[in-house]
Image 1 (tube, rainbow, N blue to C red):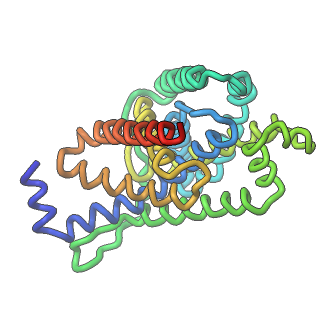
Image 2 (image 1 turned 45 degrees about the vertical axis):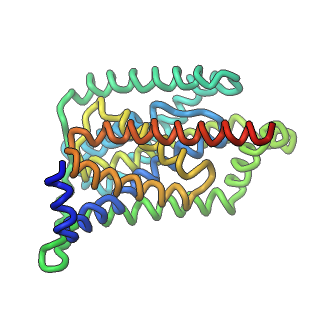
Image 3 (image 1 turned 30 degrees about the vertical axis):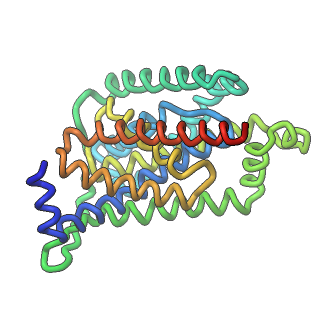
Length: 302
């Protein structure tokens, strides 16, 4: 570990490489986390099947690429539509039954059950093998070859920012966005004003699924996926939302990029095999710190 730390100190261009890769990929994590923040803030549901939706989107891109010859970039709109419909179906069959539950663990257990079911179905349909969908878009070589950036990372960064910005504008200025914000603030008052709460909830969960699908399409073009890797993306999204706070679009972007960059650096120092463990440990630390702050605040008020 000390040897790798010395490499970063003695070779700042290598550290820059890790940070740049982390910042670019972090936009994808932010997009996935934004979907989680959306349903958490509007529906008060923590979706533990978030990562499985991501992996499902990745498998659709992989299948369309290798089975039907559609370029991975061109599969993104298709994946978004399919996952939107899939998210709508999940809401209508399962999620709507969980709304209004006072015990948050009921929703956690239910969505965790959905995650396990999706893992098994993806293994049965797509197989247990590790897969990727390389778009073969080449690389950018900077500073005489000291820094190399894959073009797909740049494209993924731009796509994530564009999708996130469009969604932010829709939520901020459209009638649909106003209905969602009104529902998140006071669902009873929104219902009195004539807003179809059930339709808002269904669309919110479906939009979250579509965002996960887009993220999964980008992930499978950069990395590899398999049916059981979704939990890492779930906890990563949860951590980003906890760091940024609900409804903080800019905070989610910076938190996603920052967490990804830190993950890259730490993964290089302690080893890639411990990278997922670092995410879980960091999440535990963040929850402990937040819990301690909340306890002190309650004691101060009392």
